[in-house]
Image (cartoon, rainbow, N blue to C red; front, side, top):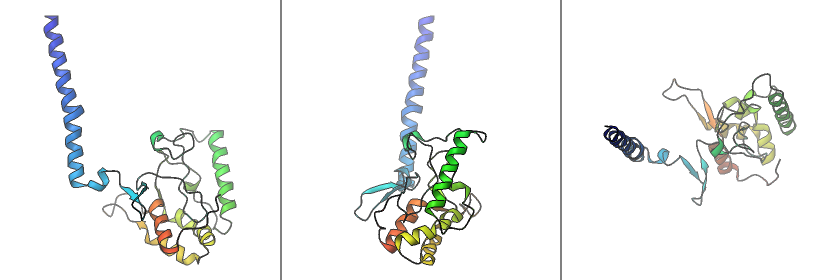
Length: 200
């Protein structure tokens, strides 16, 4: 009796494993590859030579003054670690969170002396995933004076490029207008060439 019950349980486990652990993932992956091949492969972005430089959906750090800089990241030890996606889990009363935000604010004010005040809040706070690839149009345009100075071009031209990269709401109602940092930086390079090599 016990042996029969164990065999039934093992068969049910094996069938469930094959259906939900192998067949279903293969089926859904196949459908995704057939209908949305680029997205199913990670929405990878390549440079002019075809080398992969990132994903449209994963933030990465940009330290040069001539680029849009994304939100701070708490993902992984040094931030922007796609294998360690997470928020800081620090609450509003946390001294560590306050100190980190104050340090980020000081850096932004030093590196962006010509930018209008106040600093957009999203530029001093990490997103829940730590890998948010987007900024609001306001936070992106706030950085335009620094980018223009670093690239030695007129600020109005930089603003035009950034504004051309604003993505609207999905289906006209979902989400908020946003700017993908990696795509906008690629557009800046296409229009003005790569900025000087000075790092922050």
